Amino acid sequence: MTEQSEAPAVRRPPSWLVPGIIGLGTVLLVAVALVREPARFDPDTPEGTVQEYLQAIGEERWDDAFAVLDPDYYQGCGPADLARSVPREPFTAVLAGD
Image (tube, rainbow, N blue to C red; front, side, top):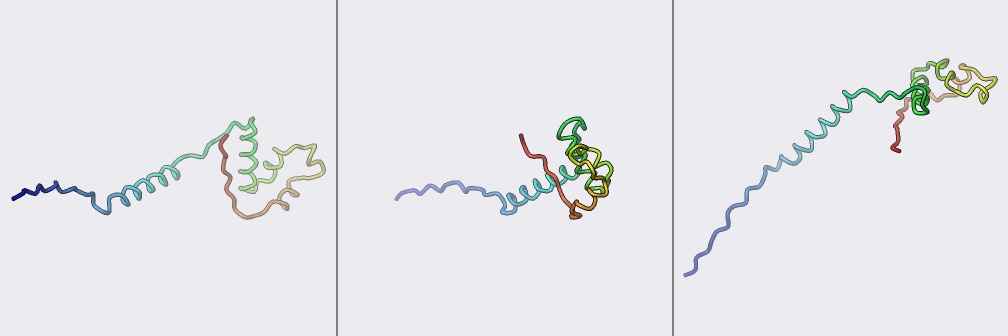
C-alpha cells in the first residue's frame, strides 16, 4: 500500500481584497488631488505669464488678461475686444512635462 501525502491547503486571499485595495487607492489619490493647492509660478517667467493670462480669462478679468499681452502686437485693440473674442466655455489648462 502506498501512502499519498496531502499537499498543504493553499490559503487564498478573500475575493474582495484586490478590488478593495484598488478602490482605497483611488479614493486616496482623489482626496490628495482635491486637497492640494494649485501650483503657483513666478509671474516673471513664461509659465507665470501664461498662468496669469488663463486665470484672468477664466475669471473674466479682461483688463488683467489684456495687460499681459504684447502691446505692439495688439495695438488698436483693448480689453473689450478680448472679451468679445474669447470663447465662454469652461476650460482646464494642464502643464505638460518638460
